[in-house]
Structure formats: structure tokens, C-alpha cells
Amino acid sequence: MTEQTPTEEMWLQGRAVVPGVAVGSLFLLPERSLIFREKTSESNVSVEQEIRRFSLAIAESQAELRSLFEKLQNGGFCQEADIVDMHLQMTVDPALCKEVEHTILQKKERAEHVVAEVMEKFRLRFEKIPDVGIRQRFEDVEGVCFRILSFLSTPSTESLKIPPQAILFAKTVTASIVAEMSVNGIGAIVTTQGGAMSHTAIVAKARGIPYVTDIHGVSFRDSFSGSPVIVDGLAGLVILQPSADTVRRYTALRDAHDAYFRNNGDKPIVGGFTKDGSRVSVMANVSGVNDVRQIVSLGLDGVGLYRTEYQVLERRRFPTEHEQADVYTEMVKAAEGRPITIRVFDFGSDKGWEEVASAFPALKQGRRTIDLLLDNPSIFLSHLRAIIRASVHGSLSVLFPMISSIEELDRCLQLFSEAQEQVRHELPLKPMRVGAMVELPALAFRTSSLAGKVDFLSIGTNDLIQYSLAVDRSNSASFDPRLSYHPGLLRLLRFIVQESSDVRIPVCLCGEMASDPLLIPFLVGLGITELSIAPRLSPMVKHVLRSFSTEDAQRIARTVLSFTSAQETYAYLRGQYCTIHCEE
Ligand code: PEP
Ligand code: MG
Image 1: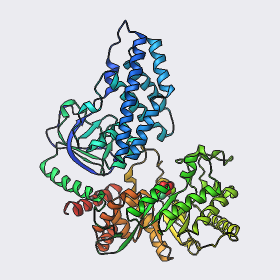
Image 2: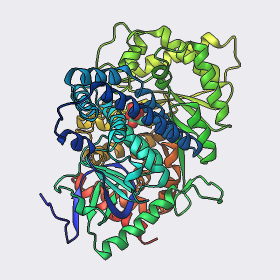
Image 3: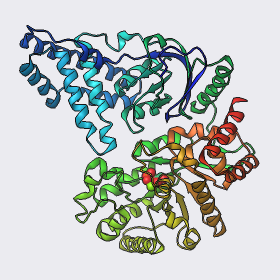
Image 4: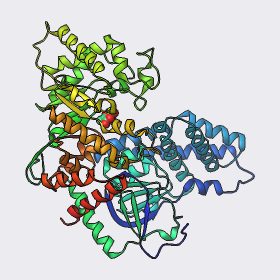
């Protein structure tokens, strides 16, 4: 393991969490929990005084969090403000405060030792939680504890004097630190531990801060601080002591990335077009009405995927038919005439079983909702009626997820017709498009049999990857983003696109692959003309589309399909991407 600052260029491969490029100097964040644990315990500790010091540190943390909350809210950083607010609530949580006070009384130790010890206890408890998403929430506990510790003796994050645009290196970094520093600007984040679904990742993604984790092989020391470093959040690379040539190439790449995320400034927002003017619809994946409002300002063509299950997960119960109809209607109105695709409830192991368990007493782990909905027609019918009620206000399509067989689809279509019949006497029914998600290999191989049954198909690559490559998409240890480059998966995509074109069913691709800048030319080269993505990524996706012609895309697709490994494909696509964007 390297202990000295490397004198030559050194490339470290980690896990890419948030794409983007940063060129800057390294700032090593001190590991504060270690500092506290290393302190030797003292004899004559006054229990009353330690409890008082702890209460004071809590009060100071709350004052700091309140002021940070206001700063973030005034600056329009709403998501970060919500996280800070949650940290504020945690400072009054008896589970934390009572445990610290009780331990001080029992062990007669200094408050900082006890807070560090309690934090470690929480770490052990969280490590045992099977759900990776909840496990990663430990970083919130850690964030709050660090803040309290900082008031017990060491310098606060603010007094660490992190230079603007610094590249932050740490073992782990908490969401509140990222939120705090995003106000002044931070170049990138590099950690040895961290999860793709953690709050840190959510904040970094929302603010466009490149983030690479799982960096090993070098033991970072204080002497590293200030040394030049490059972070490539797309490839998951960290380059220490880069040569002048590497800095030049990466500076060009960073400028190209920054241009993607600039929302065209004062230029009018145009739709998605390739360099030679072929139209590619860029739609939005949304989970609420607020997301729909963004599609208008970002110039998106509509909603390609509305994940309705979030309504249930947020309420922790099934909304009534009229509550649902109100939400869908609000959504249609917010879209200002743009088409919206509403996907029926899609729960799964990755999306909240507990919340739906009471509604489906026969729930068994591992079953997806489409069969649960089919087994519970009254819930399904009221859901479908709500969608039909909203359809009179605009252009709505309904989408059935996780379809595994033609028979299953037929049963969904049958219930959809029944729902239409049930409301026909109340409403002036408008024709609605009906679609199926192709996200299970078993259905993918039956694409042409869907002719005459559906008006469109939506390829859900997130699940298609999970179910064709036997990986768990919610487990960051097993889900490597590069699985998207697997040659078998790419051939399966070609098969779906070709079959649907043969039987003239339009196709949209709505998994995360649709916004992978390396894969976009390949997808367009296959013949895909509709992508559905997270709204914020729309300027980047449109920028990438404009960088290649249809002919380039077809050549790229042909070459990619001749490769036999994901590594080869990735290296080639990355080379194409650098050639196009570094030359701009
Ligand atoms: C998918 O599976 O690719 C998809 C878009 O749906 P979700 O991520 O909601 O399962
Ligand atoms: Mg899916």
C-alpha cells in the first residue's frame, strides 16, 4: 500500500456513483471518530458537567443546523435542506440523547468518548440490517454525531477551511457535510466506503458533484493534502499526480460535462436531435407532480414513466380512487398538453413491501405486484378507473410493468376494458394508449407476439439487467453499473428493438441506461427514438444526442455488437465518447 504522496501519475479504479469530471487539489477530511476514540480516559470526571457539556453541544448543533437549513432553503437547495431538517429532528431523538446521558452516568466518561462510543453502537446495529437502503442511512446518524462531537472539542466543518472546488477525500462522508459544502462549492468526493443509494449519493447527484467510492490501494495521509488530482465520476477513476497531458485531456472533458448540465442559458430549449437532425424524443421518469412541473421548463417531450407506487409508499396506505384521480389529473394539467404515461403500481423487493403488506394479506416475498394486482381485482380496478378518470383532461397512456407472459397481459387488458365500462356512463371516454414493459427476458423473447395487443412498449433495463444477469439492483456490492455493457444484454436489446419494429410497435427505453452518455449513441444506432430519463439529466442527454449523426450511431452499434466482453465494449464506447467530446 502506498504511504507517500506518489511522484508519478497513478490511476486508481473505484466505483462510479455520480458522473462528472473534476480537476483540482485534494483535501483530506480528518476522521474525527478515531480522534475521539484514541483519547485516554481521565479519572475525576464530573458527570453533571459532562451532561451539561453534552446538552450545550446539542444546542449548538441545533443552532448550526437551523442556520444551515435557512441558508440552503434560501439558496433553493430544497433536497439538502430536507436532509438537514431530518438531522435537526435527530438531535432531539431520545434514542440518541438518552443513550448518551445514560452512558455518561453509568461509565463516568467524558461526553466526547461517550458520543463516539454510542455512534459505534449504532454502526454495529445498522450493519446488521438486511435492507441495504436502510443500512446506508447510518451515515445520517454519523453526520449528527460528528456535528455534536465538533462542538465538544474539535474544529467544526466550517473551521476546517476547505478550499472551494477542493476534491474531498475521506473514509466516509456524510450527507450533511456535502450539503454544507455544496453551498461554497466542492469539486468532487472520493471515499473508501459509500453506497450508491445513500443520502450522500442523493445529494451529490442532485448538485452534480462527481462522486467515486471504493477507492483502495493507497493509504491517504495529511501530506497528500493540496496535491493535484482528477476524478472521473463516470468511469469511477481517481488519478493522483496527473501528467500535464492528462490534465489537458480531462480539463476538456470536464468543460464538456459542465456544458451538458448548463440548461442552455438564454438559448431556447429545443427537443432531442442528433447531429444530422433526426428527432429523438426525450421524456421524463417522474414520481410526483413536482417532477412534472420541471418537464415544461426543461423542454422535455412528456412523461415516459410515472412511478405511481410512490403515492402508496409516501402515504403508507393505498390512496382512494378519488385521491388517485386527483393526483393524476393534477399531473396531466401540469404537463400542459404533453403526453403522460402512467405505470400501474409496481412494488417489488426493492420498493416497500411493508407498506403494501396490509392490503395484500397473501403477500409473499419475491412476488411482484402485477400478479398481486391481478389477484386483487378490486384494488386494480379502482386504480385503473382513477387513471381513466384523469385521462379526460389530457393525453394519458397506461403501462403494465413486470409482464412475464401473454396470458398475464391479456388479463390486465381485460381488467382495463372492465374499468372503462364501469366509468363509461359518467365520463366522455377518450381513447388511451396501452403499453407493456419489457423487463423480463421471458417476455423479451415474445416481443412480436405483443402485436395487436399493445400500442407501445417500454424497455425497463433496470430490471432487465437484474433478471437476465442474476444481480440484485438494490445491492451496491453486487450491482456494478458496467453490467449495462454486457454483450448478451446488448444483443437482447437489439432483438427487442428489431422484433418490435417488424411488428410496428413503438418502443421507449426508460431504464437508467437511457441516460448513460456512453450508451446513448449505441441505443440510437439500434433504432431507439424515445428515451425516458431523470428530468435533471435532460440537458446532458440532448447535448450527447447532438454530438453524433445517425450514421455514427449505426456504426457504433455495429461495432459494439461485434464485441464479446463488457470490458471491450466499455473501453470502445469510452474511447468514442472522449474522441467526440474532448475534440469539441
Ligand atoms: C426498469 O426496471 O428499468 C424501470 C424503469 O422501472 P423501475 O426502475 O421502476 O423498476
Ligand atoms: Mg422495473
